[in-house]
Each structure stands twice: as structure tokens, then as C-alpha cells.
Length: 326
Image (cartoon, rainbow, N blue to C red; front, side, top):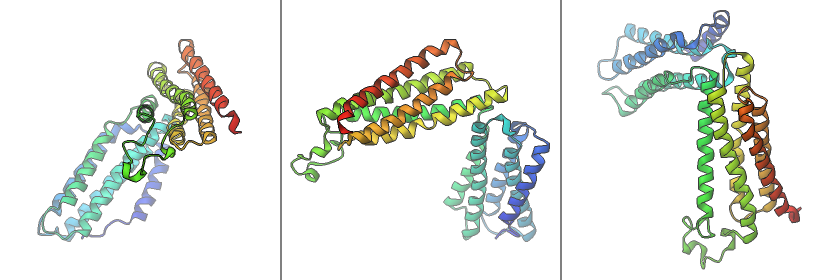
């Protein structure tokens, strides 16, 4: 086993110390992070090789390995703490998550070595070592400022929304039965269970619901373009506005998921209306925050107003179709 394995509590204490020091010396994350995480990757390699075959490392060697690991983990955590908070919440979250993956990878690798009988390099040890390498490599691909971080986040949101929209479009095109490729005849007997079909009234209601989902996709695409062209992270106000956009657009995908689930048969029209209203509210908020931000000069206001009107139009139709259910 590793000699004098560092206590996690002691490491946490040192994280706190470094956090205090970093407030007094807020150097940028990227000035030293390349070398920091390269060194972390090298420590993982040294540790894995030392326990890849007999004989076991000496007590003195184990102590050196242990100190090297502890220093590497502390340096990785410090790189995150050195990133000034005024650089943006979205950027800090991405850096935090990436750093956490490195630290967790080192912990996992150490645990694998401590729990495996030494004979040869195990598959689990190889995988754990590779995970640390990959996590360290990903640091170099992190966004360099909050604008890039927000663009990265919104791109992910758009992909999820696009997938949800395509899935619903496909379901509606499956000859009235969205479960036709899932449920076999034996499970439904004569296939007379109308709970697996959309009624004509359901179909009418689905139209404006799909309109809201398409407006969500269009909103994210247009906003991505606006952030890419006009987005800046030069002032604290600009950084904060980008964070607000990232936060509110993150609510689109969950709202679409809730609406889409309620659109499958058997349809409860009031539930559809409620979920549609939630999505419409999120979209209106996205458009309001966009219009008030620096990413929306006069040249961008046209699509903001168009989508605002589209959201209102589709929501009005949903209300009309479900009025009798109230």
C-alpha cells in the first residue's frame, strides 16, 4: 500500500488555505494550468507504473509518490481557485467540473491500486490511468472566457432541444400510433387500446405545441448567433448578462421534456396546457433578457419580436383548444 496516504480532510484544509491566498493573488487560470495538469497526468503515470509489476515500491518511494500525488491534486484545485469570480459563473462552473474530474480520477486510480493485489497491470488500473490522462487533456480544451463558455453551453442545450423536437416529429408521423415500434401485438391484444393513439382533438392540440417547440429551437439558434457575433466579456456587466442568458436558456430543455411527455397518449389536455404555459413563460423570459442585453443591438431585435409573437400566437391557440377542459 501507499505509505502515509494523505488524509482527504488535510487536503481539504489546504484547499481552503489556497483559496484565501488566491484572493490576494488572482492570476489567470491559463497562465500555469497547462503545466499544472500536465504534471498531474505525469504523476498518475508514475503511480501506475510503480504498481504495475513486482516488487512493491519501497516505503521511501511510496512516500515520494504520495507527496507527488498530493501536490498534483492541490495544484489542480488551486488552478481553479485562481480563476477570478468576475470572469463569469458559466466559465467557473466548466472549469470547476473539469478540475473535479481530474481530482476524482486521481482518487479512483489510488483506490484501484490500494484494492488490487499486485501481480501485473490490471485492466481496471489501465482504465483509471487513462481516465486521468483524458481529464487532464480536456483542460486544454476549456473555453477561454465567459463568452466562449456560454456559447459552449448553449450549443449543448440546442442539441438536446433539436433531439426532442425530432423525436416528437417522428412520433407524430407514425400513422397515428407513437408506440407502434415499441409495443407488440401480443401486448395489446387486438391493438384496440385507444390509450396508445392520438384522437383528432389531440392532433389539433399538438400543432401549436409543436409550434412552441420549434420556436424554442429557433430561439436558441438565433441567440447562439447573436452571442457569437455581439457577445463580449470585457466588463462585469457584459459577463453578468452572458451568465443570465446561460442560466435562462438552461431551462428550455427541461420545459420541452415536460411538454413532450404530456403530449404522448393518453393525452390529458390540461396537463399539456400547463406544460405549454411553462415553456412559453421560459421562452418569453429568454427573449426579454436577450433584448435587454448587449448581444441584441437593433439589428437583432427583429427576430426577438418575431419569436415573441410566435410564442404568444401558439399559446393562444393552445388556450382556445383547451378552454372547454377548464
